[in-house]
Image 1: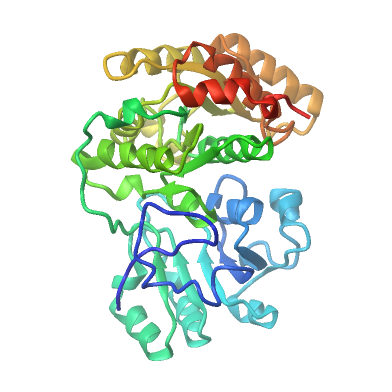
Image 2 (image 1 turned 90 degrees about the horizontal axis):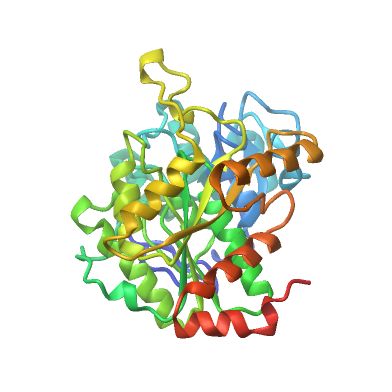
Length: 402
């Protein structure tokens, strides 16, 4: 079986090779079921929730989670899940005629839960295509790949790099457009969400904006350039990030928003974070955080000695600006605060005020209260950046919000 990367309709990916997933009959209005047993929720199934919220190429007809079956998805993830049934098994989802099964979780280590194999087999036997963002490649699994060949269906392992390794050259520092990088205080802290919201709001205003995805979920929902950064050999992470920025520049972007990964103080993933930060040469950074989170989320359920507290927002602002100074000086211009765990809007606004005070920059929730104010803050902060694309960004009448 050949492997490559699918190109969602109307969008260009840094990952070429459409051999694995043909665009014909797949890339528009595809009916999908999201597999997320025991994990479906805003933090535990980021991939599934973002498919529901942002994908223009997938029509979600069912979520599969045995622990939440019998309700609709909005009971667990809000209005983006409205009218989408949650069922206990793929057998129950087949009546909705799904054409594709998407693995809706990205667990620590990225392994396929062994108990899910029977449902993957069932999907393939029903000629459903498989989309997976796991580190363990479904296409390399002898049983599943052979079964896919037998039934004439296809597998997309989104995290499989297909581009030759590339060393950073410094060219990315000279792109014409403004580069904004979303960074976080932890994994799963809203970096991709903020990046997508920012890029789409800019596009809505008529700005030539590009979204550069660096993770499997961002690539799945559609991007202007994308690379699975956490699957790239460490020597080439900065070069891969730089290529994303250069690709968006070749497309004529006046604003490129690069999705971040991990956090600078994360003992497991900081290497990816720093390579990406240096490689994309950001002019501005949006710092992302979940309101109320006090320790690294993935480790809060483990032994006490593994718990690492999240450092103050002010520490992150100072550290980001200090670490970029030798390569390409940047400025943290705003905080994107995820307030979904706070039920009351008034309390959420108080959390935004507290975050702004702690970080020393304005704070916004681009999902709850809309991305417009966040984009306004980016445009205002770009006044100190001297680039031709930035000049167009600031002088365009489209930067005036509705």
